[in-house]
Image 1: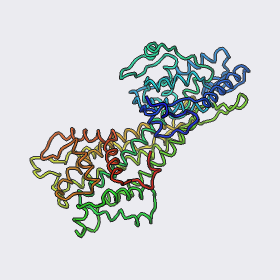
Image 2 (image 1 turned 45 degrees about the vertical axis):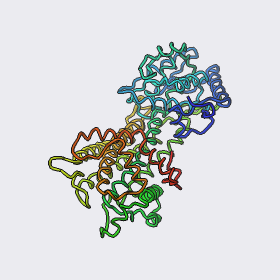
Image 3 (image 1 turned 120 degrees about the horizontal axis):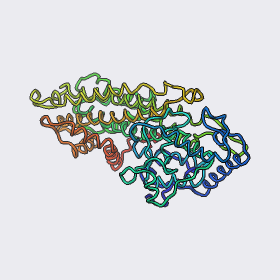
Image 4 (image 1 turned 180 degrees about the vertical axis):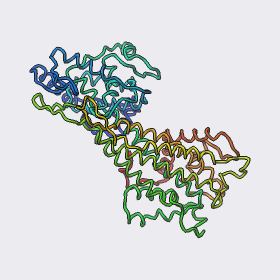
Length: 523
């Protein structure tokens, strides 16, 4: 549990991606302060006033969706909230990762705590209890069309509030009621509008966007380091990374990557050894790293900026301004995130595409490297077959790049006639990132093998550290072995962020900030 002074105040402070991830990890604790509690209570009282005065307000005294014109009596309004969670719990497929479900809870807390949704304080306190105690609802991965809110996933997320559904707790899966009884807690009795407020919103899309931003950032950082190692192994030149060149086409992502490559290659003995070799130009996958990696950086930045807007948005419906002033609109529509998620999907796939090309270059037996990165080939296949895997993964990623947001299927008998499919965009991005981590692992495996053929010459201190860090997990290959084991070992240090974090820590201790001047490109 986070210390008391390391807290975030829901509904009052601005939530960032970094803070959301810190709360999910337990390094920060989300709380409801006095101001937020007052807002929440006032909003709930305004909803009750609407019910008491029998005003016709969508979702409070009427049915939902196509049933918006069906009037609901005062005595049935509470029953309606219970039924909406039941009826909308239609998700299918495997459960989403518990961290993503926890992020859904955290982001819903931020949206509801702003005091425009009419929920009870008790309801928000129970949601926060789930977060603080890591009692995480089971949410199926499929079933949201990304408009009218992420209805099915959010319904499953909040079934435990009323004693239904399932949760993950201490590594096991339980019926929600079992865990509530263990803590001597009773189900919440939902008030008017609460069921609708809980299931309206973009928190499923948003949670996957948060993870996508975090994971893509890690892959982009790793790709620059690994690409620089491949360049060194292939005795490529750093001339195309000259700052003067990139000032003439000043895309921020491109300039950042060029700067990072210059810093990582600084004082490399390998680079100096072939400065007059006469080679005119390197292949694009080496020479154009700033342009290609940089374009993906720009796409990442766009996704990050829009995700942080959504993190602090109110996305349910209707919005309660006062008892006399409510707005029924479409803030639940996922299109604002669906489009950048699809764009980021392409950006992630392209990092894998160019990495695969560098893997191929490392195998050709040119520029002083042995063919297939092994001296005794014929008897050994060397590193030929790992590149088959990158080729397969790159192609799979290409098939995942069709934009889900380009499709729409009408629902609710045409009342909800255009939907975003952003839930699919978010899940798809994270599938591409799964594959990208393996592609980068194979390039890192190959580059680490190749760069040893340049010994006794040394690369820069930063890249030598990166190579040594890899060698803690995987040794140089003198002959064939089960390379899947090596790939998985290296993928693990990419996936858990330890490779990038270790390199960044080393550079920081050495007084080098690879991202200096580009702080917006950090989380």
